[in-house]
Length: 75
Image (tube, rainbow, N blue to C red; front, side, top):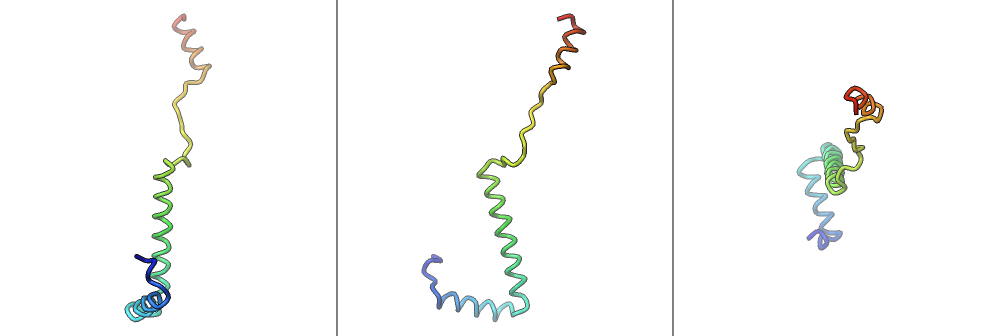
């Protein structure tokens, strides 16, 4: 759908946005849209990648703790 807009359509959209929001609000709206888009991309990337950025912590008992336990039980 957005492929068929073309240059005249983009100019019309920019003029309408300028009329509706005014010149002072357009930078704020653009910043908010950019921030929202960045957060959305980050969230989708985390979902797709399975959040590999966090190190996987497995509960492992140190070897010396197992040996110490074995000595107490007599094994």
